[in-house]
Length: 309
Ligand code: CP
Image 1 (tube, rainbow, N blue to C red):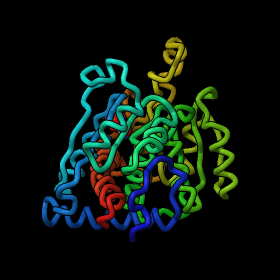
Image 2: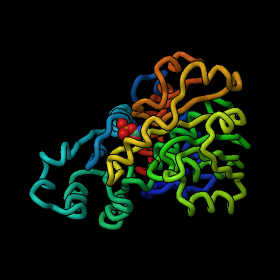
Image 3: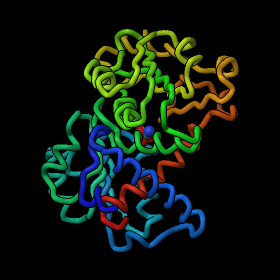
Image 4: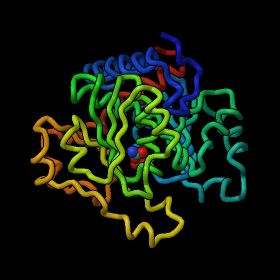
């Protein structure tokens, strides 16, 4: 395939349809091969470095698991406090440093555009694991892979995205990759947490139907998929605003059982209170399967950018 070899993974809008198809196909191969063998030797001798300037459980650990499942090694900067960042080292100097030790960088940082700054500094592939309220392209790709598995298709789906659409980097990236497949979007949020206008406008330009509403019940009743997100406490300058908005949308079992029987529910996680645990056993609640798919998709991305698939 080769189209992603040595490329950076920075933004949901960077992919061609052909590249998305290649990633999905490679992830499916990884899933199959992993089930057969438990681990592969594809990236033996290669090293991944993780630079996380913001908290993470899933993204960091699934990248580390993916690299190890591929036979490669992992090094990590560890906590910001335990690294030379605490002495004042810049992001770009940190990037220059770790590029001497590793073959691929996975970076999460609170500043929009930070992953691109790293990519512009080093010659090895850089993968954006979340740049503030900007983008989270690998989450988008694992979401896409999950949707295809759960619903059997990516084409012409009606998708409700709920919560903090202003600050939610997962939804910013997800709509970009879904726009290749003719989606209809319902953006459900409190008024001050609406999807950024330039993203909504771009979706319309790409031929997607976009409806913005505060009415979750109405949107969900017309959808194949409900994608819940957390109100992002850490992005609020005024915590009293967060206190007013938290709990704006909560899915519970009673609500879900009134929807289309085939409804699929995703969430990038972590959740706070937006999905009640009584939804977890609902057959369409796919957010734990979604996490597992992250390993296959990240295996695919590592193999592709390192030129081994
Ligand atoms: N979905 C996601 O990015 O989770 P983490 O913040 O735990 O990595």
